[in-house]
Image (cartoon, rainbow, N blue to C red):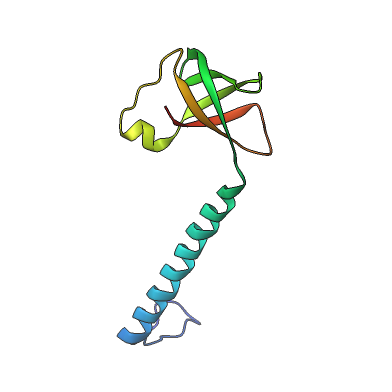
Length: 105
């Protein structure tokens, strides 16, 4: 029996619920795959850490430019420490070449 005036009571079978759930999961997984595919256009460069301040590291790249970088999530979860003078690999976005992510120490 519908709760609201004008609402239509619908019976959805267990199989239809499972199909809907599978379809939604496939859409989510496709979105994740698209996000990972979009990350293929990053620029990886080598550099050395020159300074640190409040979660940001200043990295002097091999081509002479200096960028501000943060640590990647996996390095944070594994508690990998980065100190001044470390040789690192930095991922740069093609949209903003002044900011990056440290992915390897």
